[in-house]
Image (tube, rainbow, N blue to C red; front, side):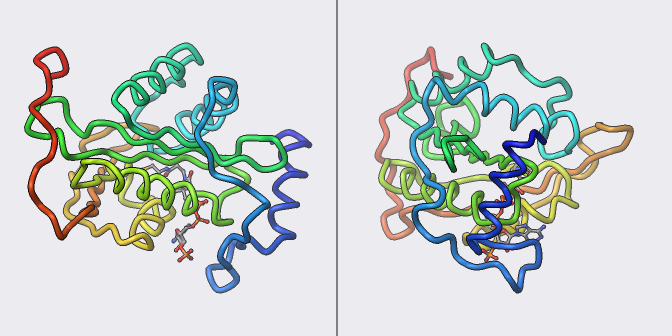
Length: 212
Ligand SMILES: CC(C)(COP(=O)(O)OP(=O)(O)OC[C@H]1O[C@@H](n2cnc3c(N)ncnc32)[C@H](O)[C@@H]1OP(=O)(O)O)[C@@H](O)C(=O)NCCC(=O)NCCS
């Protein structure tokens, strides 16, 4: 972490946004970080956040960090699908991001989205991930989608499993040893959240063939 990042995280900590111990964690006060739409200019910082987790973690099954050009293209695809791509900003720096994407490309999946969220390593456990996910879920709930799916790399990923559980996602299955990363077999945990549960009728026309 750079000196600036360390300072930023100290500021977050002082504000009581949350602490390493769950008992100390408090709801994030408004104003110290904001969740907003990510911009093109954010993508370098977002790429750096993701690169850390790709290199050091098991949440993503990518093994080499994608270059910024790929991250920009991925964001463009999310936006082109009418889906949210969000950033958390504190003191003019991006400290986390979240986005939704189509769960699987075949057309009958069109009401189902996959959610992703990553927080800068030194700023974890302070409410940033939850704020990013809350806003993402609200945006998705305002659209025609029905189900959110989190595909969590590593059944030992307590942070991600805890985050999704705290937001009402329920575990629906574990795919065992489907990944091999950092010299070991890695599970994926699938968690699911039903949006708009009162109104189950599909509202999206069949996707065009090109999108399948
Ligand atoms: C998972 C991640 C996004 C969570 O973001 P975060 O800012 O650290 O989490 P928050 O501080 O917002 O915590 C939100 C909730 O998650 C839970 N949580 C967070 N860390 C936890 C941990 N280590 N163990 C158990 N629960 C945890 C807490 O219950 C908290 O709920 P509460 O507000 O009711 O106490 C972040 O840790 C991260 O980037 N991890 C690495 C990448 C990753 O796993 N991404 C998810 C891919 S699906």
